[in-house]
Image 1 (tube, one colour):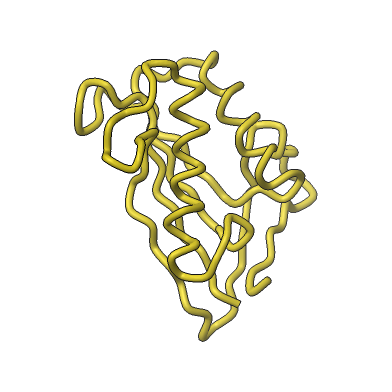
Image 2 (spheres, rainbow, N blue to C red):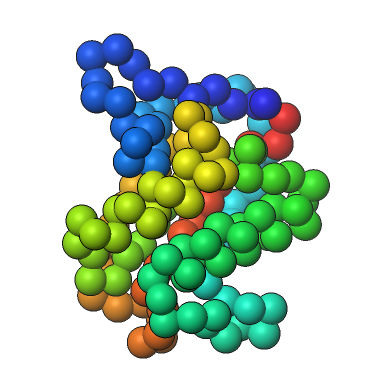
Length: 133
């Protein structure tokens, strides 16, 4: 990997919540920026009104976008997550999806609660930054 994930002593363990505190990327590493992805099928239609299903499909779509650059989810160093009408019940599906994909070394992540996204049926959207080794 071109990057390192570090959760420093003196800060709480964030991994059960689906993120890490810090990531380093060596100078000269190529970054791949993935625009906000959501739970869509290949035609752009939202796959489900269910929040958990949108979360799962969103991370799948990030993987598809990265594969176009010869990368996978293991190359992700940062996520920016947008959740419509966020409340703590939405953390479980997000943390589970992150754990499933990154295990004990999730990327850094910021979660932002929003009133709405681009269309009324979108409940979840994620931007990603990946580092090419």
